[in-house]
Image (cartoon, rainbow, N blue to C red; front, side):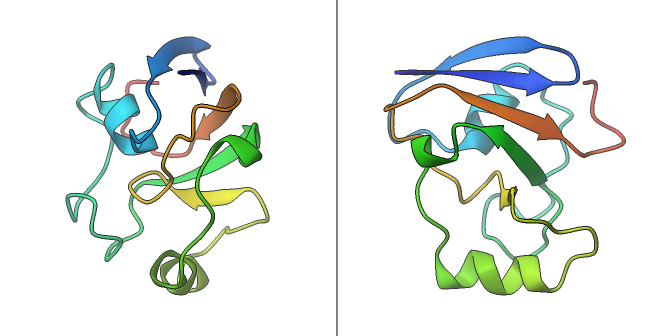
Length: 102
């Protein structure tokens, strides 16, 4: 089990190992942008993992290729739909969606 802190709101969620960050976020914010339903084809769930990057799965080729097509990507960038919680450490993410309630 990991604690996920959503910034800038500071909301904290408990997430079990195997849960995607998108699933965790949607449990408290059903308006969070995710246009492709978790298939890594749109990039709309782009987030920054500020802390706890070793607590999520590694970036797979498909996610990396999608991130390469987005503007504003950095070393902390992930797609929430593809990053799976490992349950080994707590995670702090920065929400980037402008229409999100956070």
